[in-house]
Amino acid sequence: IAPLLQRLDRSMSSVTIPPPACMLRPLEVPLRYLFGPGPSNVPPRILAAGSRPIIGHLHPEMYEIMNDIKRGIQYVFQTENNMTLAMSGSGHAAMECAVFNMVEPGESVLIAINGIWGERVAEIAERIGANVHRLVKSPGGYFTNKEIEQVEKHKPVLFFLTHGESSAGLCHPVDGIGDICRKHNCLFLVDTVASLGAAPIFMDKQNIDILYSGSQKALNAPPGTAPISFNDRACHKMFNRKTKPVSYLFDMAHLSNYWGCDGKPAREYHHTGPVSGFFTLRESLAILAEKGLEESWKKHKEVSAYLYRGLEDLGLKLFIPERDLRLPSVTTIAIPAGYNWRELLTYIMKHHHMEMTGGLGPSIGMVMRIGLMGYNCEKTNADMALHALADALKSCKKSKP
Image (cartoon, rainbow, N blue to C red; front, side, top):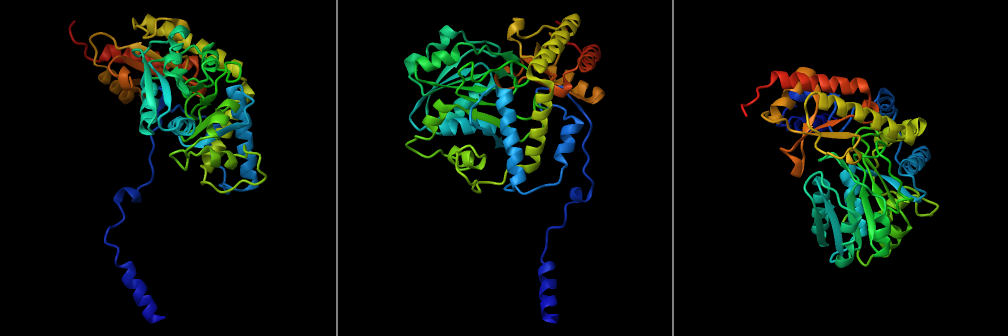
């Protein structure tokens, strides 16, 4: 025993890097009002769901929770698609899953770009060797159905559109686009990360072939899970590929089994899903089901209209002029003349413990963004945001015109 202890002693003393001082301090997280484009504040009920005891990712009880999530997503997406699940990752995971599974190298895709999310999808498609065509507008611009008819000349297998373009604050019309895509034998992929639960979307009625979202916006769950759904048209292409998708983790041939969507009696191990993340996503979907989609859409419309009036009373200009095209969950204002937008936002964070943000991607330097979604979608929060903005405009230095 003595020689063994000596050897253990020597092995233990071989540690040359000491424990970092930061790891010997307790975790500290400030309390902030998250009135930016996401993540949003998480309500106590969803936080409590995340603190439930961990169970195994392959336990029957976990499969039941995953089945509940699937049904919850079908409700919020307004779809009967069997191939409906949640990705283990943020909205970007769902974005990549959609492109990786639907597109093969050399195939043509058409991407509508009017903010950062179209840019991202175009880059992802290029990275896997797709032939990418772009329809481009400046941030806040939208595409008419006549412009989208250009889909015909490129003969794409996929057309991408962002429903809730949070970088510009635009909620893009969707009606009729699915019909155009079907006419030209093209799949219709839609991003609803920033709009789900805040603005109407009807996957089946609007002939959307692939739809995805994220957990951390109007759903109010922590970041890290991402709803996604594929209809039969999408599944036919996805499961009749000539090549395997570039990602094993995002391969729907495996994920469809993990989520019990492939009709097989047994679910095989693929990866360890974020158990606590699934608890919180289930709870967020339950809250939205209890409230009702139409009531949620109505609330976001009312609170955003209240916010618009307050912003205009402050002399601020809304970035999207057409009211019907504004994203109810994320409001964009033009940067007020003479002000440094970074100074305004820094002041609001420092003095009001409140997050608002500037633009993202092509909208940087053009807008400031205020997000009131889900749990945060209250007129009292709009009043707090307006008070913080008024204080910042009064207190921050304005350059001479």
